[in-house]
Image (cartoon, rainbow, N blue to C red; front, side, top):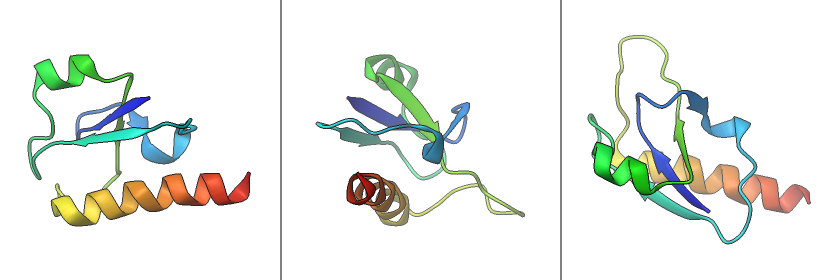
Length: 76
């Protein structure tokens, strides 16, 4: 499962069941993945932002995504 991240994605990152093997494809901090890279993904997700902030540091976004995958696997 190839999962891409983008601020323009329609699906919340917590709404997806991350089936193994899962590979994260994370784009730049503000623009996300290019359209060509998004087309390679099985699903695109976003990490919702509140307030005036419109992007996350790449390392923080990766940590949030990896923790969600860890939490889902721990619960099963």
